[in-house]
Amino acid sequence: MINQKKIQFITEKNAPWIFVSPFLISFAVFTVYPLISTVIMSFQDIAGFDDTTFIGLKNYKNLLNTQFYTALANSTVYTIWTLIILIPLPMFLAVLINSKTTALRNFFKSSFFLPALTSVVVAGIFFRYVFSAQETALINTILIKIGAKPQKWLFQRGTTMFVLVLFCTWRWLGVNIIYFISGLNAIPQEQYEAAVIDGVNAWQKFWYITVPNLKPVTVYVLTISIYAGFAMFAETYTLFSSAASPGDIGLTLVSYIYLEGFNYAHLGMGSTIGVALFIIIMIINIIQLYFTGAFKKQGEN
Image (cartoon, rainbow, N blue to C red; front, side, top):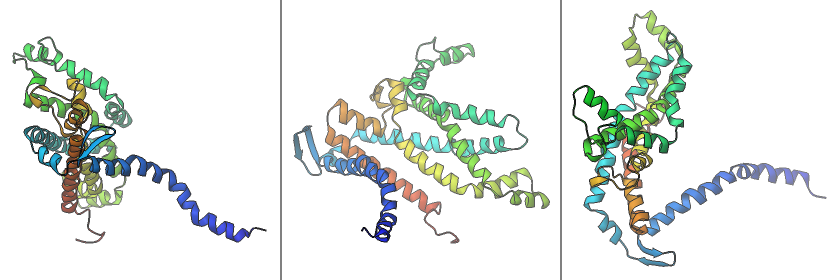
């Protein structure tokens, strides 16, 4: 007869591993394995599935070229602009929407969040035609009517960056608003009530109560925004219908990976760019997490 206590012990001991095994297996297959393979491929020259040659650091030496610097500069500028816009603006709008005096709060939440549910391909095509270089395009038509000069929006570096940042703001503003609204709902109302008793005005309540209490959400939004900025690809691809763009004005690091890995069939170089992108994002986020105090233990100054 099988010992029932022994079976129960084995079940209780292994049950947690059984429940988390789907995640562990999928994480190993779809994250760990590709990451290790990418690092290995970055040291190889790959001409086919069975034709690989180990070339050491040659790909990393060839990485430091004009096109890589252009992609890095574009991704950095794009990320900085998205951080400047997509942290303070959604925080401010979240405070307004979450206010008890604001009417139709649920309507505004849904309206701002709706672009995130829209297909990036459809939205990209829309932006491409709206900001077309033709004088009959929507934006150029408006400019002509107000007496301004029409622009070749997607053929100039500055205007292209403007369209990309506008596209990103339209698409992700509502998501960040939801994050900040969640943070606002977690703030103890007693703090605001005490501030009212002390005669604190609205601006002081926002600056000395709301902003400090939203720090964990702000750090989270900052972290994912840095990743999203440097990993941006779909927006620029749909705007130009390709990973390539005139004079590389829309080239990002992920676009560069796509060009090298798929257009030029340089999988080794594409992997090298991917490793470089991973290192860049990790370094920047570690630095910002350090300075924002995310590594400090609770209670430390």
